[in-house]
Length: 268
Image (cartoon, rainbow, N blue to C red; front, top):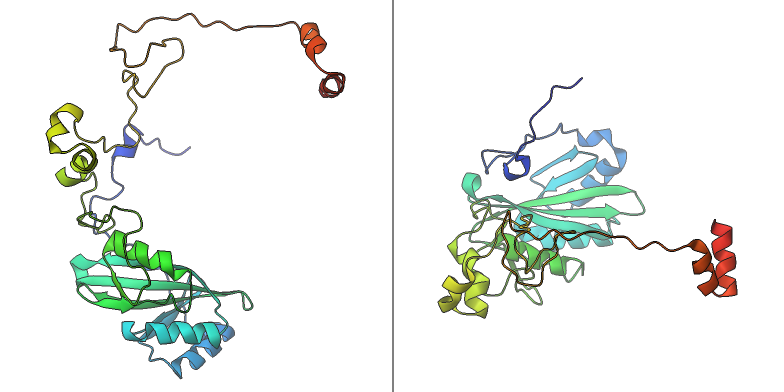
């Protein structure tokens, strides 16, 4: 039997005490262990300068310079049959390396192979958009900018995609407050009602899982129903009797149309 671990308040605890924790790498294999990947890498190296390459989790991972990303993606699509960009984003290494690691996840349907292109981007640098090659990069690049602050050049519509246009920071950065700060907690109140309404409305609830059954504007409890906006607290909840209406099956059959009663009899 496994040793019991207390689960009290487990959802409120962070799995890591260090928010800058980096998972250890998994074993990396030599390219020569896969004939298809070896042939693809040889062709790729003839056109693009490769900084590093290895096989990891059955993926061919290739590190290149960020300035060659458009040329590399075009070559993969047109020459090596990696015809789908299924995912792209960035990893925050601002604390350790003062920049981001960008990754582009490619899929070859004909080869049944996955290839990942990686490049490093310094904090104040930008990378060229690949939307001219893969339409799917459009929203991914906008999300990368919105959530992490990665700047993308030559994008057809480079603006935030999730957060409001005037949001002051990027929520997926590791330095971003986990529960939001004062600006985040008052953003919608200030935007909709103005700062003068702070004392009336109060700050936003930052815990999306919070449920308060004594808040009658949002929550009702079976057997203790009250009119909307009634002020209640623990100990003074009305006790409403719960009753169930039962009806004889023969009365139900009489109200049904002939074809409906046949179906009901078959189910019974």
